Length: 329
Image (tube, rainbow, N blue to C red; front, side):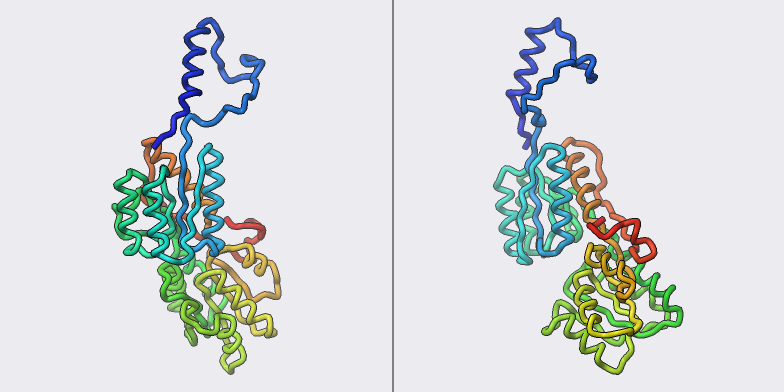
């Protein structure tokens, strides 16, 4: 697994043998007045990591990829990327190929555990560590470490904020995806937070099943007789469609929440005329940094956490200036 740069090591040995009288480097300019850069300061060990993702069109996973890449390259390692395009069978094939290739570890955002398990077993047999990200695999023997967000809390903080702003309750629209386990956790966390607040869910829009799209369904609701006090969206991309529907209306008084913390939604929060009120912030940047630190410990035989939970928190107009609108957390 480890690639040793034998030429560098041999050169160091020859210097030690034939120049015993030379002063050893002690790390200061005074002790090393001439340090000529030969361009050969490659790390003694270079690793090749792989990032296997179910859907790179999702901005969260694209930012996560770039965070991992930046951390790996900073340490002198390389990252290859495999995008399954929402196809679990394709991801299984890509993982099986990685088991045959000369990679040292895999960062995995899994699609369907049942479909990819045989490929994960191949990685295990090849001695290739797997860092499970975001979606937790049930088979604990299939991965070396799991790093994920507190998804339930990301929904809860939105519900807590709504309870403070709408103390008399009201009508709710939920935008969800019943086939997405992460979104289900977020919506559950939200609904548990508001269950005693006098809120009534008058409509559920399933983004994974609607035939006309979230925006069209939301526009239809807004044109009806029912007043809508709040909309909770399972992710920021849903919220963008909801906000687009509100562009055709005026002064409804509705507040909108979502989960993500993407630049687009934070820019909407910056607009005082937008119904956007808050987002349960995820942190793909911090998740990527944690993943790189974890895999480094695994490769070096050090100590690391088997499971790590990345904090989630509310970003609203009240604290937006702390986080800015240019990027993710």
